[in-house]
Image (cartoon, rainbow, N blue to C red; front, side, top):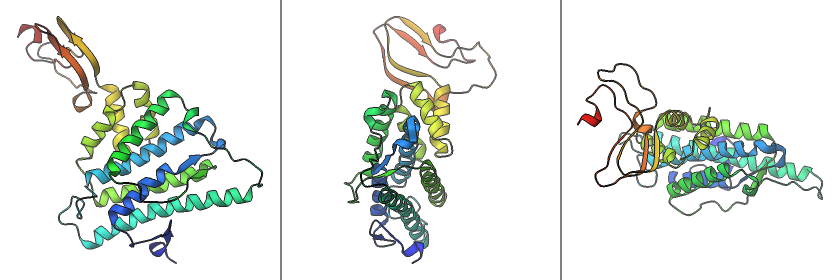
Length: 285
């Protein structure tokens, strides 16, 4: 049996539509647990897994996978659509292989031997927060109920985990090249807005290295940009950049990665929050 005709979780390639295959792929991420052999690094590895899922759901949301049969490309051919369907099935095959390896690993162990896994109860608060937020975003983009009726499985070998992630990332690269989604940048901004703490941004930046270049670059930009949260101005206030008149030069960490949330300027108040370069000084207006 060739890979094109191989069965993943009972699904034969081409037997279900793209939307259902996409839902099944998203389901799989939630079914994986990490064994104790991962040690304390399991938190970082779990974050890598969640970031990979987030990338997949971002693409699906951007190409309107549930409502647009052309996936955002009116000129898409039947062969190209079938290619996407095949890529999604290849992702399912990677998960299916992982589940089968886990099953064989358990059968090789002694019947009485415990094979414990990590749980979120053992994670540091910042990792719990990131996990919950990424899961919420991914589920909201999935839009429909779960497709797969498959039990969870545990990965006990880090090399197996690495192979799984690298395989999925490679396939995501292919599908994004075939059906690029320019609107993904807006979804990345949404993801960044859900990570208010610099510690969380740094963790995501590290986790997305070689996994999700778009989110990786976005966290890097966000760490260099302004983030103003829950600020109340009762008089006059200036917070952020300020450069002399006729200033010239390059500014980094600016633009779309500035975050302003819950800024309140009271009556008769006046505030300059971020970025004043070579224009007329704010206070002289």
